[in-house]
Figure (cartoon, rainbow, N blue to C red):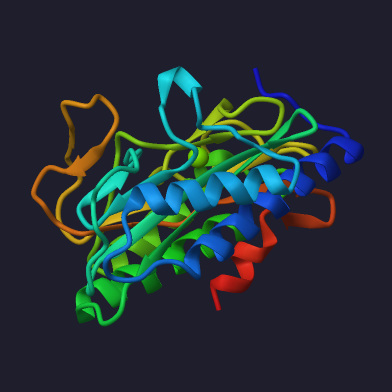
Amino acid sequence: MIVRKSEREIDMIAAAGRVAADTIAHVGCYIEPGVTTDELDRIAEEFIRSQGGIPTSKGYRGFPKAICISPNDMIVHGIPGDYRVQDGDLLTLDVGVTLDGYVADTAYTFAVGEVSAEAERLLEVGQAALAAGIEQAQVENRIGDVSAAIQRVVEEAGFAVVRALVGHGVGRAYHEDPQIPNYGTPGRGARLSSGMTLAIEPMITAGGVDILVDDDQWSVYTADGSLSSHFEHTVAVTEAGPRILTPAGAALLQ
Ligand code: MG
């Protein structure tokens, strides 16, 4: 069931979204070669709590840390630990924040120092795909319009869309209906209406679409070891058009 939110509720989600987006910007200042993902996680948790928020991922289905941090060929759900960030890495931070009972979800892939031309392009295309998907989050459009717009941008660039991982509704809970695949057919799927709040999140690879789940049962890798990127915003569908509720992340996208 898709839960539509009131304007007041959307403002509550936006408040959570501000903290989530600011967390990414804040932790981003500490990303440098030599830092461990555990240290970045601690910085994230401290920041989220200093803003009155709760790290939504912590304890979610048993996830042990505050945020997900996924380097290089790891697509999503990386558990922060003793991995040391290296020059040339792609590093994805995925942050869920609960504030006053409402949840927002946002992700951003950073380039650490000098990265390959392919990695650079993977970031540009991931951002462009997210923007194209958000643009379609309009009243009377369908989920398939969002999905197809993302797929078109990614595949025209010669990259691949991960099939097994999808965007989702968000707001009262971390994961709500509907699912939002990053591939699809225009005009298909649930119709969008005002008050829907959606986590739109293209997860793309420089290789194939297949994934592997690590023995830790969380970390998801590309099966072929290719690089991946992941950009995500929480977006409200409104009569005035899509409203990005994780906006400091939007500033990072420039
Ligand atoms: Mg998400």
